[in-house]
Image 1 (tube, rainbow, N blue to C red):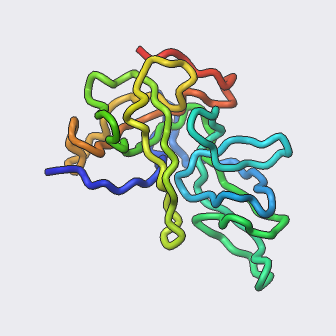
Image 2: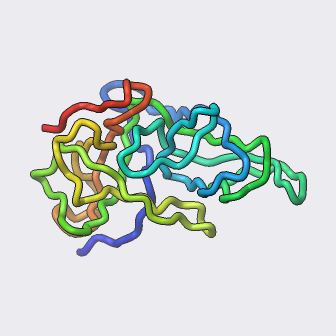
Length: 194
């Protein structure tokens, strides 16, 4: 059965080694009136003003946005949300980020230009940043299948295919288990793929 083309960003599933996967997240500030929305599953990076923002292809990553909080500037009501809208004029927006360097995630490859197959295991890749959904709050980020290489600064490491019946290995839009390779808490340079 063919894989479904339905990007969902990066979704945490386990920890590397014997570390407990307790879903731990760290709270970070989000600057007011940011030009880009942040969706659940979006990789984020730190800014030099102490806040976080959505990363872009080839950036070192801090972690993955898992939801947020802000006081709605129109209603003055506290708002827990799956995404923080672009241009939100608030001063108290917070992002909850899965930022442990040992966290493992799943993500779908975009299958544009080439296909990452079993020979791509242990390579690194960058991400492609598609638009998230303002209805579901879910990210549109995918693994950029045309970037699989040993390059140390690539954003994620491809560890193995996600082993579920709905994920056909080698078909378009397959899902990989990945780890952030170029992590700001690990020096921001990454390690060479194999």
